[in-house]
Image 1 (cartoon, rainbow, N blue to C red):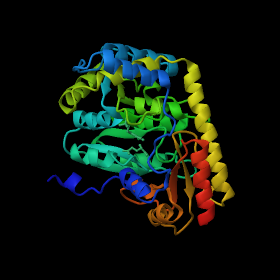
Image 2 (cartoon, rainbow, N blue to C red):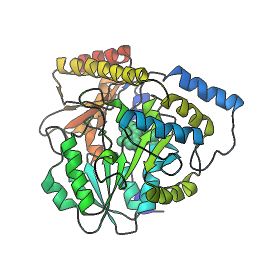
Image 3 (cartoon, rainbow, N blue to C red):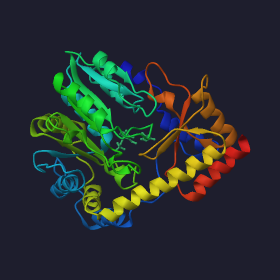
Length: 378
Ligand code: PMP
Ligand code: GLN
């Protein structure tokens, strides 16, 4: 068996969701909303299953969806994309990440990774033959530091895997950090694999700016989005990939042998969703902000130190020096019957062990019940 996967544990998301079920816990661990998602988008999928095309769609994605992706990012983020040469649909952002690493890396190429990092990154980098170079984001605010970038980048750097907004922190990088990273990408002629699945979830502060929009970076970025996140339908694995034609040629070769295509019905529905008016996107942010504030206030009331969060479905609490986040989450799910995620699972080295992530993208009643259980446990 290949040692990368045989040496990996089951992901923390699956583990915590299983524990949540076994303990009849309120699941604020794995990130999924309990909002059912926009009805018109779900209806479009149902109609497409019943009366649409159920055979293989074109390998790059349905033309109507690829056009809709280009138009959407033009409208929302000011990007000019050629839908025929610069847009690809994958089976989730996860396939896009794996495909980009497989398409770009030669064995021994170095990849800069920022900790905390989404748990799929490291195994995918290693399996693609990459050599990780870690950069730890710093508090306050999970920021980049130039000295750290100086140490991580070098002549062997092929790519940087960059998640903005950042899961698990719920933070978004300020423009200053994007510019700093951009300078290193240009200096070392690297490619940025930009995991922007949380782009529409920024509920506080400036709107999301894709790294690709910065001067000089247009042709050095693979921008990855996820319809599952945009429409609160996380089980829908539809990834939205944008990159300059030269990069896209390589990405599409990896995609054609990984999955070849993505269910056409979901693609048709996502095309319909991306065309929803600005009101939908405002509503999403407003509802995330309200849920964030509800949980943050409740946790603060119980004495937890809540770290600032401005995007994603997540907020985190700092348990303080000497804490053991994994042990805390074990006890929380079994004793308080509330599931959360230990942030140490997002580190491969220099583990940060005092921070616990909670998913706030839940109905008021779900959050109230979680807070009631936490109060009783305290
Ligand atoms: N990247 C990050 C940072 C994520 O949080 C997630 C899922 N929550 C993904 C990638 C995977 O997205 P998808 O479900 O579209 O594969
Ligand atoms: N991205 C989700 C989270 O951070 C989980 C995705 C998964 O379960 N693989 O909670």
